[in-house]
View 1 (tube, rainbow, N blue to C red):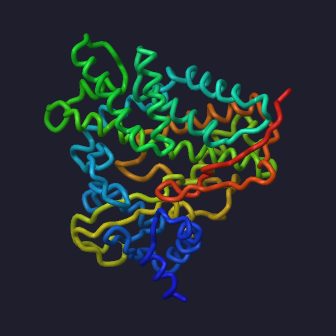
View 2 (view 1 turned 45 degrees about the horizontal axis):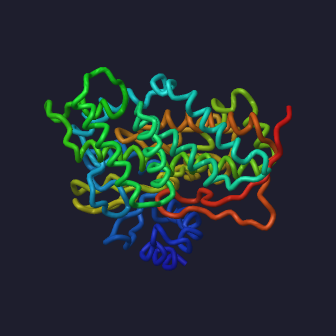
View 3 (view 1 turned 90 degrees about the horizontal axis):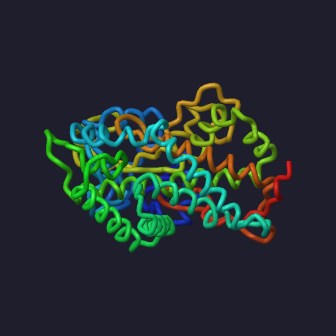
Length: 392
């Protein structure tokens, strides 16, 4: 039986729907029997599946480099995602303030209005394709406003449309986003100082001993912020929509004023929408209990770590009675997600605005829920829900 598991990982394709259907069971086998298992994907990599090993990787960036942060090679620079210390620290230092909860409060009214307008579009029909009509446009519109904060509303509309295109898989949309960002950055260099937002930080920042960022680095940061913030938060919101329709009592839980404090971390642990990322070994070591060589590539499976039975009681259940929840849905160590507070804030606003207006969700009869595969795996990709108007 072991041979069939080893064979599965040897031929594993992270973007195959057939492999995706087996993956959870195979990862559970790996955690029990072979926690660092070899895969032939993209030239070869070791899949790391246990919680403690994943923490070790995150806490040793000098040994496990982020220079290849994906499970497949990416041909463009993605700072700070693909940076190691000390340069990584320079980038995070100027970006962190713009993703603090206190700074993001300025965008809350716009995010609320966006959610309300999306609900306005569907409320009279009694049904919604929850991902394309709510989760995608809400997260894309919110992210565009925070990353590309522009007073020119015509250009802002272009930015939102382009970011939404990125979220729906339109590869040419990256170029349109980059075009808008480059246009604004150019104006910021020519104009007077005084703005306080993400794009201005790219103009003002100094890294690596005092040099300014190149345009390639500036646009790389914009790309990372979009990649890191779109599918991930959208996935959690889409999961919540599914649970509203399928889990008895879930809507009542989310209507409690303290649900965020008690329940959100368990939702994040259980869904773990950023399922897997990449690292590269910088020196020979056996920190993970097996010999690794310099140059070996790793697939660090955060989702598997969050389902590790040795760390979490009822690991394969959405269990809200958990007293401690040291989940790694946002990663570990210096690369812990820059946008985690933004993600939490979007989820809170999405749930609040939905449940103010709508209630009694259910999956539309005769429709099936289609799920994502790849780096952001298992989230609803298409899901038709019906609902009632909340009259009370």
